[in-house]
Every structure is written in structure tokens, then in C-alpha cells.
Image (cartoon, rainbow, N blue to C red):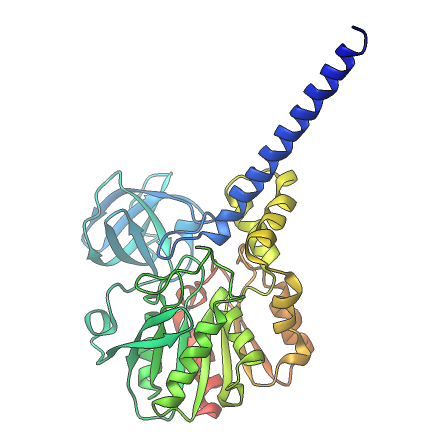
Length: 378
């Protein structure tokens, strides 16, 4: 009898430990979903929900928060609505818990008091014709998993710009700069890649944060060259910037790449995953489990992503647009890359901009930096 009790206690303890371990693993897996299952076109967990308090001609009152006081112009999305808001209207009457911004337009649906909304970098919805009045063609880029839908906006130059969105966005996001690129006479190929609406799903249903998706960008380079591009500039936001770096290192057609434009680049996937998991209120003790879960589910390894951004790997000019207020992809790695390769990297710093929204905070300054960078590449 004396041996039964300790044995039972040991078994009970072992079961408890096993259950706690399984629960911790499950929690780590769930936390990793913040990055690996970020749905295109939905807000990242770092983006707070705001309340519409009132609307009037050309103005909207929103919950006072750091997000609602950002400088610049933004999309404002809700469930079934989309609008564009401009700068703060500091002289407009408002209560202590609200701010008033200029309401540029309501693109879709309606905005009513009490509606929950969030800021988004994407100003436009629809396609380049409907949103911008630009002639374009809907094309399919042959990818390794199947056809990849893309918009092609033709222009005179034989250097094409290939655009790729990042986390939480869709191919509508690059339309922010599409008019600018069209004025510079660059043909633009705006790509939807695996996991996007209308594109093939990845086999495991997960984002690999650019680690495998770059092969879809490589397919877009082949498509561009096949249809007349002599050279290409790769223009990526967030994990799209990671894809551009990977393609510049590994694409068989990397000799056709004339330059890189990297907006809010994710240069450390582990840091980004931790940031998104933290925004979901994941306890700090579980963050290492989230990283390990992501590695186990996707095969991601930090050295591969960071190797693509290694200063010695860079062979073409790169414009990095980033700033200190990005909480998803900290700009420290961007600063270090620029400091170590001043011969090739130009860093344009944007203040007051969240992840993927460097253009939104200062459109004029952003486009001038872009013009200066692209002019020698024409």
C-alpha cells in the first residue's frame, strides 16, 4: 500500500505536467497565428479599433487615441465600409475624448455614429481603373502553385516596377503610389501572391513571411521579362520587402533587377512575430513558444531571412523607407543596413507612421525620395 500512493502521485504529477506542456504548446501555436495567419485586408493586431462619434460635411469625429492622431492621410475601414481621412482639423469643435479629421470621401458603405473602424494604409479599393482611372489589364502570372492574378498598368519605359504588398494588406495597397509611378512612365505589375484572394493557397495554409512567397515574385520577374521588360525594380512593403530581398539574392533573373524599394521591411521575422503575438496579449513567457511553433510549422529560420538582408549580399541600389514608430518591424535593422552599405542603400526616415504606412504619413516627402531614387534607374 505504501508504494501505491507515491506511484499514483507520480502518475498524477506526470499527467499534470504533460497537460500543462500540451497547453503551453497549443498556446504558442495560437500566438504564432498572429503572423502566420494574418488575413489579407484585415487589420493587424497592433491596429486599435476606434469608434465613429459623429460625421458632418467633410469631417469625422473619432475616438481620441494615438492612432487617430497620426499625421497624414489614411484609409478608414470598418465592417462593410471604407473611407479616406485626411489631417487633423485642430480648430474644429470636439469633445475631450475625440479628435476631428478631414473626411476626404466615403468609398464604400456608410459611416454611422457607434461604428467600429480602424486605420489602414490602403486608400483605394477596387482595381486601378475603377479607383484611379488608369488603363490596366488583368493578367495571370504562372506561379509554382498555380496562376497568380496581377494588374498590369502599361507605360512607355522598358524598366518595369513590380509591386508586392505585405502583412494584412492586399494588392490594393500599392495603388497608393501607382499614379506617381505612372507619371514617371514606369509600367507597373501589381502582384497577388499565394494566400491572397484569387491566388493559390499555400499547401499548409500559412504565411511564411516571405520565405517561400518570394518564388511568386520570381515568377513575376519572369513574366515581366517575357513581355518586354529589359529591367525591373522590385517594390515591396513589409514581408513584400522581404520577398524582394530574397528574389534579389536568389532569382535566376537577378541580373535584370535594377533596384529595390523597401517600405517597412521585415528584416527579422522573429521580432515581427513576437510583436504581433504581444499585440494579441500573449504573455511574455509564451513568446519563445510562439517562435518555436512558427519554426516547426513553417521551417522558418531567422538566419535565412537575415542572410537575404546581409550587407554583403546586396548588389543593387536600395531605397529603404522606414521610421521609429513602426512597432511591427523595428527600424533598427534598416538603419544598420543603411549604415553598413552607404554606397547602395538610401534610408528615408518617416516619423509618426505605423507599419506599412510610410507614404501615408508624408506623401509628398515620400514621393520626392522615390523620385530621386528612381530617376537614375530609368
